[in-house]
Image (cartoon, rainbow, N blue to C red):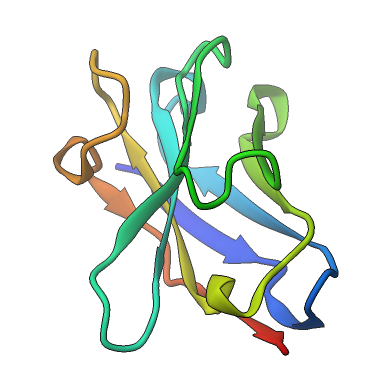
Length: 124
């Protein structure tokens, strides 16, 4: 199985930046599609970004496109989410997820393993 541990969350002013990291262990990291999700109070968990095992294909939610960048370093078994131009509406708990799928990684059902989450708070 795969164990995922997120880090890098915190408090930041609107317009600032953060980089989240997700370290994976337990299985061959390069076999998995990786995704970042977030969940704000009173809202359902939503996909923010995803990256295929090859790193050649990425997906971004419309709300973050142009501001966030997902990347992976298979040699380090780590996936990153660079978040720029942060807005108060980005405030949420962010979760790293992994799934061994032949799909594009845009469905929550494609993910089998989840991290514990890291809080991101953007002040207005």
